[in-house]
Image (cartoon, rainbow, N blue to C red; front, side, top):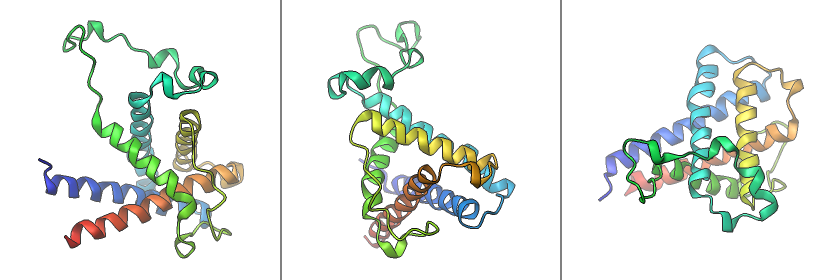
Amino acid sequence: MVDASASLSDFMSLFTLFRQTRVALRRHIGYGEGLDRDDADFLATRTLAHIDDIETGLKWVLRAEDVPRDELRHLLTPADLVDWSSEPSHVPGRPVAPNMSKVVALRHAQVVFGLIPRTPKALVTFPGCSSYRDIKVPRTPLELRERVEELARVVWATASGQPLSTMDPERTRRSYGFFEAGSWVTAAHLRRITRN
């Protein structure tokens, strides 16, 4: 049975993560302001940790037969291949169980990536942009990994105070759109949950 209070708390935390990240990105991107220490720390710790969870979740669910052969070598590095046989808690012959919170982070991110082009125009706040319709949804595991890595680069550049003029505008818009769409969908689900 699912603990409803824990689920609500987890969802509130996810909403806060998406909202605060979007607000911090907006300050840097929309207003050209430097981030205060709290915003920079939030991006560098909470947001980047969540992005890392998404990437780890992708590695957990990745199945070789689902990946075009020409993409497989770009998805996994030697560091991703771990020999668990010497792990004290590992039972030989039994697969290692995935960390489900990381799989959930990945699945949520996939939903958000899919909703970016559908974000209502009234909710789009990226400067000079009225829609995200042109942002393509990642279709393959490699495209998904590239977009997750793009999120990490944009968030790190923002957290470390990199001047906006040195950041790629399209990557920045796609990343901003991710956190905007994530705020929208998470808020909509929170409203639904709290009404019931």
